[in-house]
Length: 487
Image (cartoon, rainbow, N blue to C red; front, top):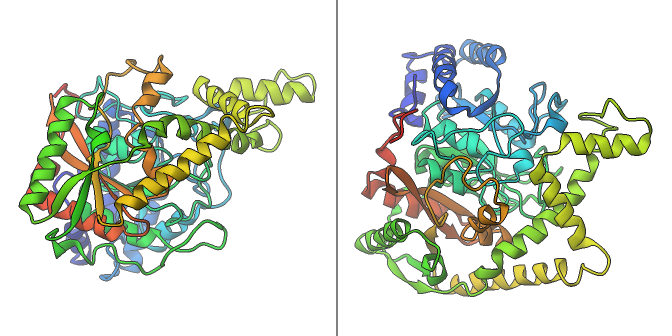
């Protein structure tokens, strides 16, 4: 069983018409997944017994014809709390941690009778852009297994790209949904900050983190977002409607929409094939009746520096809780309390996590706060103003997700600055708290190119509207990887 040719509506109708049971669907999914994941390494934990038990209970209750997601499999990024199911954030410090509660998004998943298959691989504590920073394994790109799938949600993206599951959840702090979606040729949405509750998401950068869905199509992605959103009293930053319908405008087309194409997003450092794909997409939108013109995000060049100062500062605070005392790994050879703290963190955290903790502590320290963190926060405000100026007379912003297609495994992991620079096109969206969608827009040397559509706060519906129009007018989303070969 793979999900290359089966969209949500088709599977739902098969379940409702009893052509397929949730148990059979789940069993076929798990059996195929086990074989495919020998090559891809997208999963850290497979919850086979509970998944089958859940599917059986859903069948006994009966599939609700009005619930599109009843009996549908889904996999979850391993930094989202899942009650009774190991949750590691791909870190040795949480290697054997089993949560005693579900994240809010998991409550919504269970309420809609979805079947949780397992937990997907990621960069440790979501810090990285390739999934090579996982403490346990390196996930491969289904289009070419010598290439990275992107990160930090690389396992979630690869699982959908390889047809193992129809949906996954990821998290996006600086591009961690959109960039792996781009690298693996799937659809990934980073919603408006606060649109989905962060309660139960293991925090990296609290003012930047946002959970979002992966899928094979824009329509399915919008449908899944419908059930994930809403205010949560346990998350003071959550806002928005519980009854939003992001599929309502899908068929409206793009005639008359004003789309801005930032000149900074097609400048030096962007691979020529990526530029060509985005310019071709702009022409396609013009052909469909949209108005596309050049705009400017003048402060985007400072985005990477501001992002890494702000996110690392927040991470250094958030990760203080991992001290070897309350939960997680505790150093066995500690002789006193200081050894417990130091040795547990030394043994439990990987190099990238330690690097960002040190950067964050330095940026917040006395004598350096004004020079670094305060200036980064000021740049963030300027970037928000840049987007606000564009949205005065534009509906959307269009551009590439990443400056290149997927790079080789081992190519950039030893050079953090090069990897950080790859976030230049994605971090402005997080700094401004805006929604952004990645969807396939072309190929270069057999590797997918992702297009990014950015919208105004809480206007995911217009983003999906434009994404769906492009998807229906092209066939990039219909192409699938050969799984394991070097395409």
